[in-house]
Length: 226
Image (cartoon, rainbow, N blue to C red):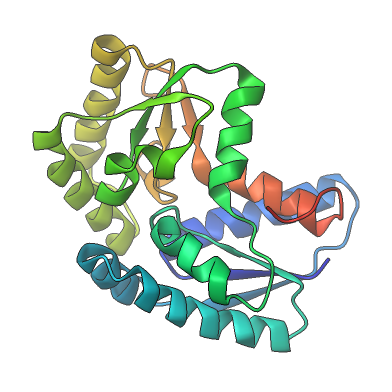
């Protein structure tokens, strides 16, 4: 299946998705058919901050129309933050969506996880990872949410994490495990691999990798889009 990605939101996460899809197809000795449309991360962040879900969905829908015109048969967003408008987008998309939320829900159920901690944007944390139901989602205290959000957005925009940002996020994850009983920390921002590029001393799950694996299965016609 010819897969379309909306990338550029942010660029480092797009590379994670691309490399993962290339690797999985090479391992399976399958040819990857892929087209990437470049989105605007600054525009996405502005709409996310303002809660303009319908407006962002309309922007994504235009990219999807371009991907469909290029032969794509299903599409995915390379950003967990971008999923804040996924329901609005599903209503206007001209292609089936490979939605990360049910993918993560199924992953938690398959792994038998009952409590997961999440780090990412404000929308991801406050929504409990957009309402996944197979595991209880815990996150940082309300007075820390804005700080985590600002830290994550800065990393996503810059395309790298400073040592100070890395240490701060590692400590936030550690507290979720020790103080709130999280069995694993979900990197609920697809650019968080820039900070979690070494072992933080506790289990982590990269939402970008789990999503990319699901996209690969769709691309290889092993399952249908969510």
